[in-house]
Image (cartoon, rainbow, N blue to C red; front, side):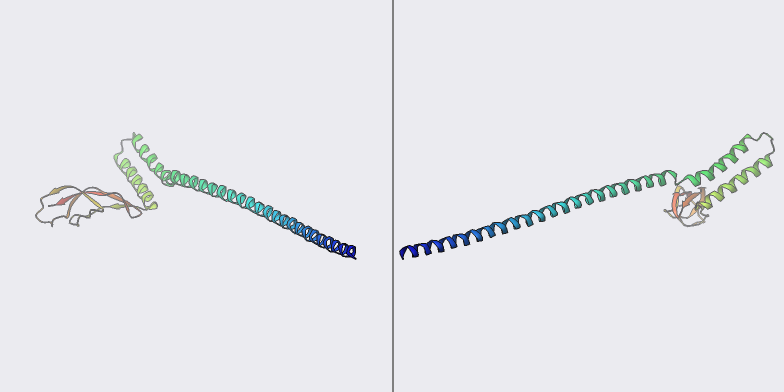
Length: 186
């Protein structure tokens, strides 16, 4: 009987060992599955990181290209912004050169040609929004538009009023290109 009990105990121990082996095997299997899941997750994350890095590089390159293109466009705009004005002013220069080459001696024709040239220049100025600053005597001096070149004693005018204009000034789109040079009453 003792032997039966020993056999039973051995059977129980073997069953427990088998059970432990199965549990251990299942644990190892679960650990392997966990490792595989973790490995898959890690590879997916690495793939996503690689895609994000690639997208980031593409965006940086696109931004640099856009910046380069805009700088080129700004340079072209700056370099050629005056081209329309230059084309029109060339015509005025041509007219003046023709007037200087005139050998006819006809002063009236020369004067008429210069007047037509001046009209052409005025037309060019109007087309590009260049306006005269031509103050009239007795107007108040405006330091934004006028530059006082000299001060004279004028008894019949108020102080800081314009006596005479030495040189007209010009505005471009409302901004002073050159102030009018004037003589001012003391």
